[in-house]
Amino acid sequence: MTKEELTIQSPEDVRLQKYKSSLIASGGAMVLFSLWTVLRSIVEINAELSTRAGSEALKPLLAGMVTMGIVDLVLKLYVGLSARKEGIGRGKKRPYRVLGIIIAVLSIIWVVYMLILFPAALKLYGLIYPTVTLAVEATVLYAALDLVVSATKVKQLEKEMGRA
Image (cartoon, rainbow, N blue to C red):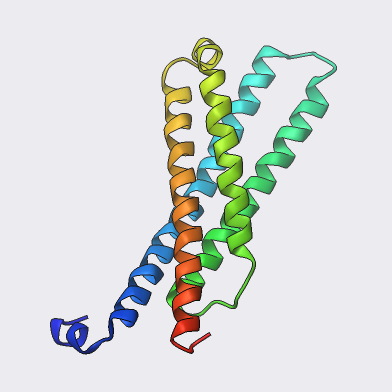
C-alpha cells in the first residue's frame, strides 16, 4: 500500500488490516509448527523404540504416540490454513478460533510437562532436543494466542464496520 492509500483509509480499516496480517502470520506459524510435530513425533518414537525394545507395552504406547502426533498435525494444519484463508479474505467462518484455544491449552500443558521433566529429558536426549522442544512449544503457545486474539479482533472490527 502506498502512503496516499493509507491516509485515505479509516482507522478501523488500518486496524482491520493489521489484525488480518497478524492472522496470516500466525496461521503460517501454525502450519510450520505442524511440521515440527512430525519431527518431534519421529524423535520420541525412536527414543521409545531404543529404550523399550521387546517390551509388551511398546505397541500400545507407539500406537498412542502415532495417533496423538497425527491429531496434533491435522489440528495445527487446519487451524493454520483456516486462519491464513480468513486473513487473506478467502476463508469461510470456521471454528478454528476454538481449536486455536485448544492448541494454546495443550501447549501450556506441554511446556509445563517439559519444565517438570527437563532433567530426565536431558539424560535421555541430551541438551539440544529438550531445549529446542521447550523453545518451540513456547513459540507455539505465543502463535496460538496471537492467532486467537487476531481472529477475535478481526471478527469484532468487521461486525462494527458492518462487514460481517
